[in-house]
Amino acid sequence: MRLGGGSIGLKACQCVAVSRTPDASQRGLRRVLGCVLVCALSLVVGWKRSAQAMQGPAAAVAGSETAAPKGDPAASASRRVFLLGDNAFSAGSVTKILQSFFAARGEAAELREIPLKGKPLLEAAEAVKPEDVGPQDALVVFDHPLRPVVQRLPDQTANDLATLSEWLPVRYVLLPSPLLNDALYRERRLAVEAAARGTPTIYLPLVSALKQAQSQAAGRPWQSDLSFDRATLLTDYLTACLLYASLSGRSPQGLPADIPLDEKTSLHVAPDAAEVLQRAAEATPAAGLRGESPDFDYDPGLQSPMQVFAAGSPVAVSTEGLQPHIVDWNGDGVHDLVAAGVKAGCADIFLVQKTAEGFTAAAGIPLDACRLWADLQPQGVTVSQFLDWDGNGTTDILLLTGRGEVWLAASPKAGEWAAPRALSGAKGEPLRLAYAVSAWGADLDQDGDADLLLGDEAGQVWIAWNGGTGAEEAFEEPQAVSIGGLDLMVDRDAAAAAADWDCDSRPDLILGSHSGAVYWCRGLKSEGRPSWAPPLTLIEPCCQENPAGTPQRPGAPLWAPVPGWSSRPAVVDWNGDHWPDLFLGDSNRKVVKYRELTAEEEADLK
Image (cartoon, rainbow, N blue to C red; front, side, top):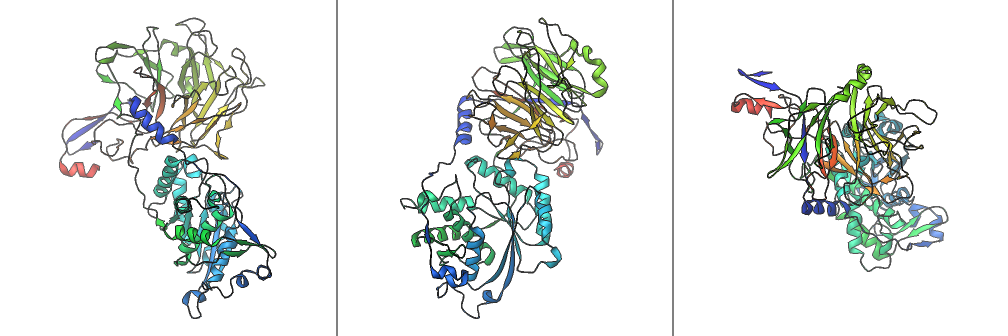
């Protein structure tokens, strides 16, 4: 590429390191683990059987001071409200309570529930005919409360919300979940806002309303029914108040506290509880999705990234991506760096020495063992990991082919490797995951043998459990990693590694992605096979590619080396401070600037 007589040279994929300091790491850890504490006591909602309840919603509020006066424009307005999705935070009465609110105010409204039943939002929404939509109609989306954080697919969510917004006004309800802490709630909101940028979607922050109600209900006998752990009839009442205020544009204060649920039963909300919930709903206004940017590009527990150099030059490979490995190659007690080219079948070893200033790395030495898998190279081979697979004290090499097969080059003695063999399933068939882009071995279930953590091009994360022994593996078919009933996904090219990021002796997941984002799934206490919390962001996605072909991050100069696209993580305590540090390889290009650009050229590149 040439710009005004100057030129920009493009080199190969880079490696960067991000360190953690004890104090900063602890601050980041506290932020991550600061869960919302809630009480889970008995339900305090009264049920009332009465002749009035037998007569239906209109009779239940007859004579109420909240009924709309005759001649009120709202009384003659007719609307349909489509409730799309499976409300995971409902005791089953939201729709009936909302219907009663409209009836109490004399507003004609038809409420129609459209369950997802496992379908994507757009497919389920086909039940709504755009040509039949009226000017007063609206769509309320009850998305899975974990989907925006467990499935980091901003393009899909953006497409869904943009399409739905073309049909009719959309209210997106941010539902509570016991699996989310404050940091994850914030990430979810930012993810939804980023996805809906440019659409008129309005989100209803039920989480904020519930927090306000909890604060105002302090000391009341029914406070325990305002919980993040479980849905109750009081939380249903709050949800209906929030929906009514947004859909009608009217205050929820004064809405009825007696709600018919069926022909024989009605819900009675204590007057002081109804007042608190109505105030909380009114004090939590709906907001347009503004596309707010996060206030950090790297987790607060991380220092600013540094590009890794060896012999005065950046560590790089000339292939489509770089997979970093940290291993004590020469047995001197110091971590060395290995840079493997993605699908290149080769790797370079950079021996590291300690100095008074820190560390220095020598020029790269080609990995001689790469000749052993030359026959596999037409498929495209990636050196995925160095590990002691069979427990004999030597370093074995895990390989991933372009066909999605995992091979092992075992080391019978230090510095020597046998020809690689394909890892096999329980019936002896080769282990394979179509379109796999990463493979990582670790004893995830603590049964004494290495399981395989796999990532694919679509961004999905898989585990192949090993039911064999260290010497004779027997892998099950790869199973998708699931969190809260949803398959864990990142934005393409899932590069998965296992590490104890928070030093609690449980295996966590560190995930790279095509967007350059890096995520951390905290390992949870569990018996047998492990489970994980929803992913928190360690490194935000890169900005969109600019004409210079370089990734950019907020606050960094245009030419500064920063973690780029298709990030591939490696985790190790590099500096001996007992906190793991993060190494990243990517598909970035090292930019060589031959001259300063003019102000006009700089503006064109931004």
